[in-house]
Length: 265
Image 1 (cartoon, one colour):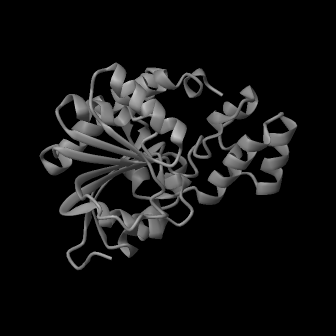
Image 2 (tube, rainbow, N blue to C red):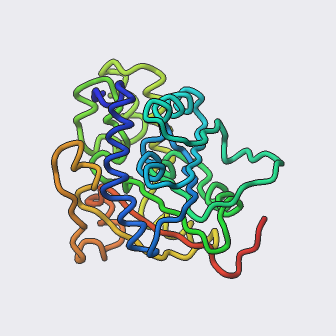
């Protein structure tokens, strides 16, 4: 496990820098502006939302983990910025009247969701008529698409493609390397819910979204702050080959918009 996964404030600062340098410019380029109200689902400590708040946006973060929500509140308060952070499970919506947002962020979340169709459909209840969703996720077959970097074992955390092994063999190796049951369960869950480019494109269409923009990266923009590697788009020749491209794509960026024929659930 990398130090950044233990020191959550450092992770918060990393997220904030990547959001400022790459996510906000990408969204602005794709839609022409940054809306004044933003919702992030699966916000964790809230780092992605910090630069939005610094530009004057009203930010709201939802996460299923109470500890992460408390950290988000603390980190924002320390920086004297306002943000609303709520413990919530988007797959279990409350009957209360929902606030709609012109921009929803979904970064490194969809690959953890089992019922992706239900989840993406439900997001539209929180989206304004002309609102957009920014989605970022690693393609499942890419070298670290299984999030094995969260493992405590240095062998596992630095071993590319190990998540593609058959489930029984993968679990056996995780146990052999001394991983805790909680980590093993999390890694196996990600193996069950990992997302390919083709899967996401199909589900987006099935849930009545238009793909306004898609960018596939050979070098994830977040790797700039993690490893000092400048972002690099996937070469067009590789990006055009279904399934093969998943092995090379370390990050997928999307801008989604609700299709005209959709009506509120």
